[in-house]
Amino acid sequence: MTQAPSFLNTLLGNQAVKNHLQQMSSLPSAMLFSGPAGVGKATFAKAFAQARLGRAGHPDLILLEPEGKSQMHPIENIRNLIQRLAIPPYEAPITIVIIDSADRMLPYAANALLKTLEEPPTYAHLILTSSHSDRLLPTIRSRCQVLPFQPLKRDDLQAFFTQRNTSQNLDALITLSQGSLSRAEKLLSGDLNLEPIFDYLENNKPLTGDAEELLPLLQYWYRDRHLLAAGANPSQLFYKEHLDRLKAHVSRPLPSLESLHLKLADALEATHRGIKLSALT
Image (cartoon, rainbow, N blue to C red; front, side, top):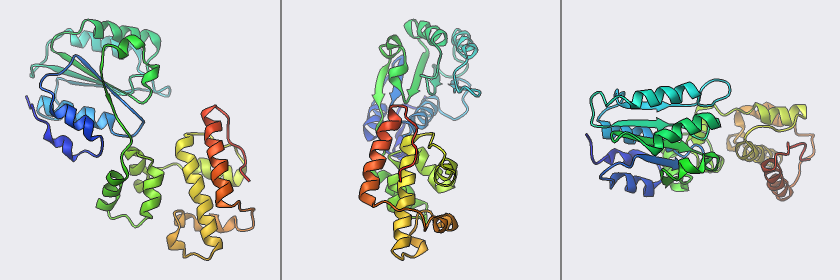
């Protein structure tokens, strides 16, 4: 069994967590990787478990993820896990269980898991990940060693984008990533869903979705409009692939960047209170 997972150094960010995991001589029965979405909690958990067990795809590594349209952990999966943990490891001295997004459990599933956490087999080690650890049962949290994850630093994101030789605006990519590696990957791959932005701008629909992701994208839309109005080269634009859409908005009112910044800050606060965003202009 691998004892010194130095490979963690290849993962971006969260050096304090890396140091703790690398210095860990024995595993606690349960750990909780807690922190914002997209900062690498599940990636760290999988890599750490694979290093401890010696390889990827090990039969003594169990991964549970939310399922279906509801994106919840079915009670059946928790029950199956309990039955599986009654069986000793197949090959390794230990069984490692990763429960990703552990807060995505209804109370009866969480209570079933709690029984395992209260009396775990000596060979079982659970790693829970959560972007909303406040939604976990307090009794579950209290039985876990908590490792807090932080958003990626600017230097980490700059290294990520630089290594991929992107031609996009580096400052814009770093700002829009907001410390999230998964968001950074979406920005590069083009998987970021911009339709809510265009529905809001072109069809006057309320802006719905992840406010912390969408509002900075909206801010860059208006930034690009200001740059176009000032005669900037389209290559300077973040939305250069949507130049026709930008030009179609030339005749529309264009708020100052200062007033827009204030309105977006108010809008973000409103969405945190559950209020849908209507027109900013």
